[in-house]
Image (cartoon, rainbow, N blue to C red):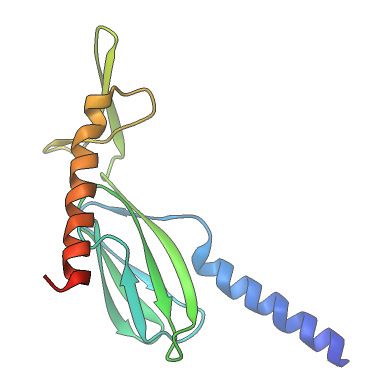
Length: 152
């Protein structure tokens, strides 16, 4: 094989392997677990928001993703040299993925519902109040991160 053809083949393989894990978002129903596979060995996993999903390494090519709360986050996988192997979007939804929209006059509020409960799931068109709870959670989480980073 000519060197230029070999280099092209290596780039095509690398692009395909990255896309295998980084394609569309991984949807995990609330309180369930999925196994994810990596194209290359990984040594470190970071989850963007551990209140939404948790990740546990099984071996250097597989990990469990456990859905903990409704929402979306991401998982970043690093190899032993600290180089990014994958960055996967994780979406936690109900098993039926049912969205219920409550309309009160001109005020709209959306909920994601399971057989047991409904939880606010702000959607475009919802009123400001629908986003206040999510904003408060984000502010609280960012405050915890800032406190941890500052060592206080």
